[in-house]
Length: 311
Ligand SMILES: [Zn+2]
Image (cartoon, rainbow, N blue to C red):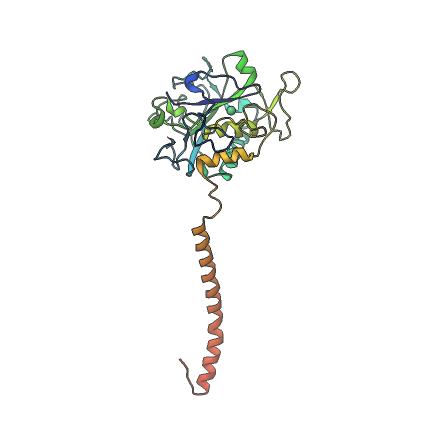
């Protein structure tokens, strides 16, 4: 797979990944680098429908709406993508290995995606049944269900087991990346970490503070799944290192996600506002008109009594 990007969040500096699947820096002078956020060397995004990821081009303009589904992979799956994802011979494990119930984790994933959706033209299309196939399996074999597949999957090296929290791939399908491209958007969480649900978690220290806020890491990794790379801005969600709980977006994160999916669709566009105003005016006129017949009727009746019918 040629254009696949696999990004990682670590508790130390971002660990280098094999060149074929990892690229953190956007080329200098890129027109997409309008703020401090960074996009992968081959920027990609999810289109409005399921399984329709595309790279930025004339046909897939940045700043246009998009949407993606997500699913949770089961246990026992391996890598069919051809990429070195540093899992070695390990296979996926049940996501409850992270220490939370399935419903709790589902809620965390949904909430994190909704944070990105609320700030941009991205739509969280919700959870779907997983294809039940290996990571990067063909679309015909179910590899596209959902667009973003999430699982717990142990790393093979002790270094990664200790210091890499998770990694995620940027958007893609077989149409954009060829065989193995369905790995696009997928997110793998390290089951060897101590995951917590703590909005006040202050950071990580290998000896004194080894727990990590799962909602924070989900928000960061799903930023990769939606097409963002790391940001050099301190305090941003997309900062490469885990610096403690960070569950709301920094202005730099918002600039980044809006560069890919446009501004939030929740705010009515000007034409919609005009239509709304017109509808309110019509409703007001109808209410006035409804009142008038009562008045007119009495006048008309009086006129009849007087023998002066008025039309
Ligand atoms: Zn990252």
